[in-house]
Amino acid sequence: MVDWKITPGLTPYDEAVAVMEARAEAIARGEARECVWLLEHPPLYTAGTSARVEDLRDPDRFPVHVSKRGGQYTYHGPGQRVVYVMLDLNRRGRDVRAFVKQLEDWVIATLDDFNVTGEIREGRVGVWVARPEKPRTASGAVAEDKIAAIGIRLRRWVSFHGISINVEPDLEHFSGIVPCGITDHGVTSLVDLGLPVTMDDLDVALRRRFEECFGD
Image (cartoon, rainbow, N blue to C red; front, side, top):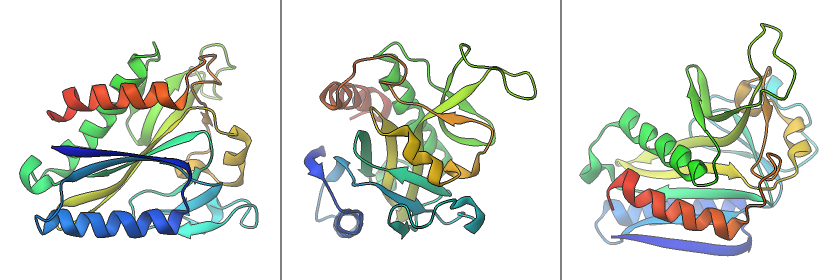
């Protein structure tokens, strides 16, 4: 069984990390069940283990937290659903690539509930949405915007950190960083795509699709 936790309001980042680390340790010791935690953060930037200093364009705009998750810089803030996944890969198979693919498939399946086609791109972390209504890229390709980010960490084969999906954040806040080190693509959200999706709507879809993607 997996515990589902939804925290209203805005949860401070350092507080969330402390809770995740403690829960992951308890799961590894067999003293707690796996957990999926849904929350929102106040506006902030996080720097993953591959973050480059030059990708922080506006270091004084919001607090910057150094994170031990994989990936580069990302933004969290109100209107973005952050999903922290504390799952035991000891019993789910010790395969990091397969686990990341499950997370990607989960996001894509969830977006499909709202008739949004999310896609994965080689060399670009996260989930992307084609924007044919926008000008094409310099190479002539169809424009694509990022709608979800993925970044995890494992300790004793228990995961923490996870994914974030843009419901209705202030997309201008992403301009203070180079999101995930990618400069030639934009960022979007469900509301930016013209869909009146609420956080509650997304949470229902996430839980339903989790069961089919992770087998619980």
